[in-house]
Length: 246
Image (cartoon, rainbow, N blue to C red; front, side):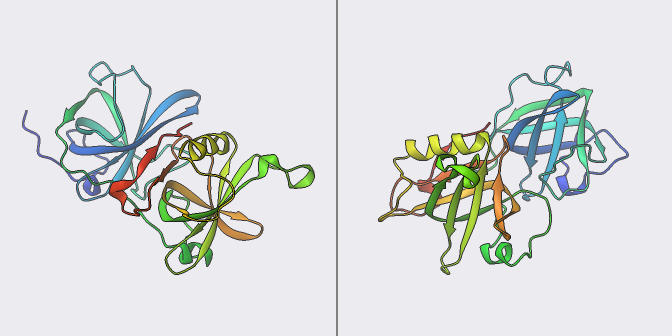
């Protein structure tokens, strides 16, 4: 059967003979009665959509699916979103069937498909959607609030992020992610006290929250990423990915 390649932006309910070529930007597990795996997919136009499925349920579906790889996905339904937390602005969600296939595809490009938001827009409350996004800047402060005592103690690590306009924003790594962040941070050779050489980083898949009455970013989920450089270069090509997925 001939399949034309569809764009993610064109996906809508009503048919099943869809075919997309997409990169797995990220994947994680959620528990909603059963443990499901969620994939965040992006096509060459940078549009994204999610698919949630029970692993090892569909007979034609591949067993191993890796973040960063490209796949050609054929024959699936497009449904109203069922996930409680969403990480795409697409109005629909993919649902696999017993006829769905997912074949490894040669990389189309090396793009990361970042979705950056501006620190000033976040600080001024202009970002009101609940969808995760990316930010970049220099980490110029890290406060491990797990080390505090009394009422100030909290299971979180608070970062201070600085951009090129000298604007700062607090970013909260919460719960288990706080411990994983500190482990990755120290493995990069960084410390809680800065005297020079702040670290340029990209925070991936973070969301808007609040801290001490002001907008901030927060991360407490399995899908969040921290990408930091261990050198003086600030270009993305020099970044070392720290896999601290929960």
